[in-house]
Amino acid sequence: MFRVLLVLAFLLLSLPLAGAAQSYSAAEQEVLDQLAECWDLWMEGTRSGSPEGWIAQCTVPELTYWGAQDGAPLDNDFTRRNWDMASATDLGWVDIRPVSIQVMDDFAVLHFYGYWRAPGPAGEQVTEAKRTEVFRRMDGRWKMIAGHATPVDAADAAPYREIRR
Image (cartoon, rainbow, N blue to C red; front, side, top):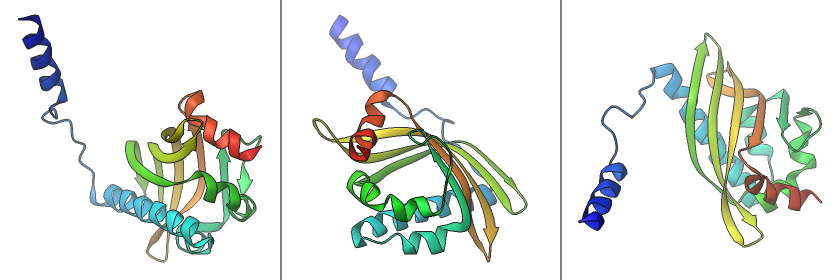
C-alpha cells in the first residue's frame, strides 16, 4: 500500500499545476521572444566562429556585462576577447525561466534563470545561472545594454572556471 501511495504522490506532483503558468503582456512577451532569438543568435555565432551577428542584432556598442567570474563589468569587446572561451563552453541553451519582467517605455529589465549545456568534469552538463539583463528598444528591436550572471552553485560555475584557466 505504501508503494502505491508513493507512486500516486509522485504522479500527482509531476502534473502541471493549474494556474501555475505565467501570462505576460504583449510587451513582456516581445522582450522574452527577443531574448530567445538573441540566445539563438549567440549559438549560431559559436557554431560559425563569429559573434558579429549577435553583437549587431542584440546589443548596443556601449553594452556592459558582469559575469560572476569577472572582477568588474566588461564592455562589449568582452565578446570578441573571450570568444574562444564562449565557443568552447556554451554548447547550447536549454531554457529561460523568467522571474520578473518590467517594461517601461523603451526599457526593459528581466530577472530570470538561464540554463545552458556546458562541458563538465564528467561530460556535458546543464548549468543554471541567475541573470539580470537590461534592454532598450532601438529601431524596433530590444537590444541588451547591461547584464549580469551568477551561477546558482559551484558545480554550475565549474565549466566556466575550467575553460578560463
